[in-house]
Image (cartoon, rainbow, N blue to C red; front, side, top):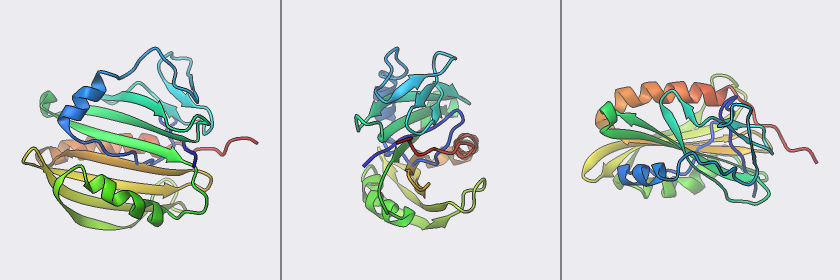
Length: 209
């Protein structure tokens, strides 16, 4: 398995692992942007953006109010990574949490990738239910194979909405989860749309051999 992610010229509609609780957001914030460069990354000329060496994807420290959370390379080779972003909602009372990951998986469809990760995504909520799931289109590249599910559930007795999306880029596969309180849906969808537009503008490259 291998992976990578990208932001800046953000490329991957990578569905990160979901970690949607407010308490988790606060914990992650404590380990946000640091001076340490994670293995498998380099730092861009601006001094804060991380570049995933294997894929060329960029991950800025901040974007449209989003703040990059902890960075971690799961595979020392740099072919399996995950990065999270957090954005305050409702004047800071709530948060929109986005988790992305890019991984090299041989011969796996976007649907199979989604099915493998669906239960893990739903396990972060109480009484989760599937609102919709099926093939998805990436507006900037309709030839890409993608699969998306949207869900509802409860966190701390409050209704939440969340989603899981997987994309097959060829050498790389990406997944991304997004979660937010249902009452903040309109605000969250607006900012998520901006984030996804930036992510979709990038295209991960296969590493040179």
